[in-house]
Image (cartoon, rainbow over all chains, first blue to last red; front, side):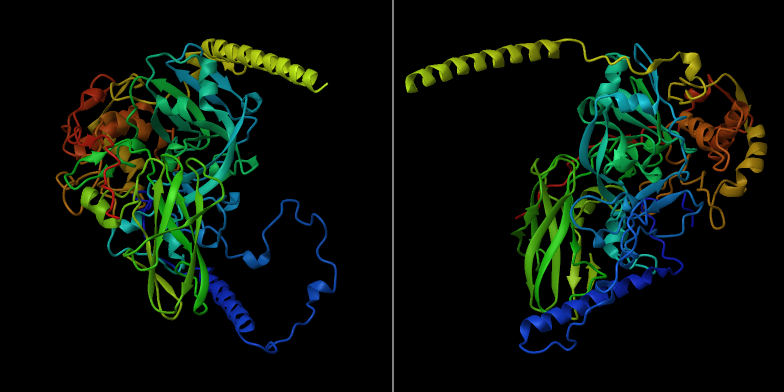
Length: 434
Length: 196
C-alpha cells in the first residue's frame, strides 16, 4: 500500500527480482568450501587436478579502463535492495548488504538510502548554506567557504530509527524474493563511513550564537524540505557539517554537496542536502518530529525527540542465506554499535542464550562507530541457535525482544535494538527465529 | 665529560619544562579568548533569507499574513490533493498518499491509526508541511491562501473546526489539537539489564 506512510519499516513482499540468483553465490561458495574440506581431510589426489587458467596466460584489461573503478563482475549481487517497489519512486529506503561486507566501513555505493522526495541533483557552485535565527551575525556560506574552514574526519555509523523495526512483530516478514538475506532485510538501514567536514561548533562560532538559543532547525534543499529540531548541546558536542565520505565527496544519495552528521543519533536527524540552520529557543515541532519518528506506547502516548540509537549487535556471518558446507570450524563475525559511545564487550551464545562467551573485538574502539567482532566456533552439525549481545561503555546491555516489548509494547515502530537470533539447521541452512 | 653531559641534560630539561608551562598558559589564555574568527561566509539580512525562511512554529512565528476558508479548502483539495489522498482524504487502496483523517481514540489500541486529527499535536505543523512539501510533485507551488484553506479543510474533516471557519495567521496557532498532550520525553535507557 502506501509507501508514504511507513517507509522506515514497511515489510511488503512483492514482485520477484533478479536477486534470487544471489543464493547461487553462497551455494557455489559452499561448494568451494566442501572441496577445501576434502582436500584438507583426506590424503590423495584432488578430484580435479590443477590446470593453468586463462587469466594466467594472457594480459588483463587495460590500465584505467574504468576511470572510476568498479567491483569485480563476480560481485555483482553485492548490492543495496529495497523491501518493496518505492511508490512514488523517490519515497523509500534501500538497505545495505551487511551479509556480504567485512570490516566496519561501508563502501559509498552501498550506504543505505532513505529519501522523502527522491535524490536531488545539486550543483555545488550554486548551493548555499544559511545559518540564522538567534545569532548576532547571520551568514550565508558557499561550498568553497566551507572547504576553507578547519576540517575533521571521523568514523561514525548512521542507522535509520526504523532499522530492525520488523522485529517488533513476533511474526516478522523477513526474506522475500526481493531480499533473500534477512540480515539485509532486517538490519540493512545501517552503514558506517569516514566523514570529513567542519564541526558545526566551528560554524556557529562564526555567526555568534545567542545564549538564549536552545535548539536549532536543520533543513534540507530537496523538494521535501526535510526539517528536524535538534538540541543545541549536540551542536557544541560532536555535530559535523560534512562534504566528504570515505575520502570522496558525498554521494548524491548521501546529501551531496553538504549534509549534517549527528553521531549516534537516528539517521533522519543527519539532514542531507543541508541548506539552512536556524537557532531558536524552542523546537519547531515539524512533521518529522511529531507525526513521524515518534515512538507510540501502549497507553497511547508517544515518546518524542528520541534521538539516540542504543547499543545493538548482529551476527552477519553466518546468517540466513549463507549455507554451512559441513561440520567443522567457522568464524562467527558480526557488528556491534552504540549511539552513546564505544562498544566495551560483545558476548556470543551458540545455544540460544543459555550460555554466553566473550567475543574478540576486531580493530580500533571508536565512539559511535561500527565495531567488528569475531568468535571461533566449531559446528558439530547439530542444530544450534547463534546470537550476540553488545555492551557499551555506559554499561548498557543490549536487551532481548521480550524486555523491549515489556516496556514499549509493539507499536512504537522505531528504535528496536533487541537481540537477533539465527537458528542453524542440521543441513547447514540458517533462519531467523524470534 | 659524563658529568658535564648530565648537567647539560638537566638544564635542557628545565628549559623544556619552562616551555611547557608557557605553552600551557598560552593555551589557557587562548581558551578564554573569543573563538577563532576566520572571516569566512557572507553577512546576510532577513530580507535576503525571506524566500527560504518558511518554517512555522507552534506560536505562529513564521506564518504569512493571509487567510483561507474550509469551503475554499474543499475546492483546492479536490483539485490538487485528492489524486493521492483520495476524495475524502482517507487514503487507502489505489492512493499513494496517507490517510489524513480519522483514527481518534485508536492510539492506545492494538491497531493505532495516526492521522492529523488523531495524532498531530500542533495545527501549525499542518500549515508548515503543506506549505513546504505538498503537493508531492509540485511543492512550494501553493499560495498562502491555498495553504490556509487546505489546513482549515483538513481540520474540519477531522472534526476540529466548523464548516464555516476561516483560518488566518492569528487564529491558526490557537487551534487546540486533540492529541496536544499526547507526547512525552525520552526516558531511555528504559530496559533493565538482563540477568547474567
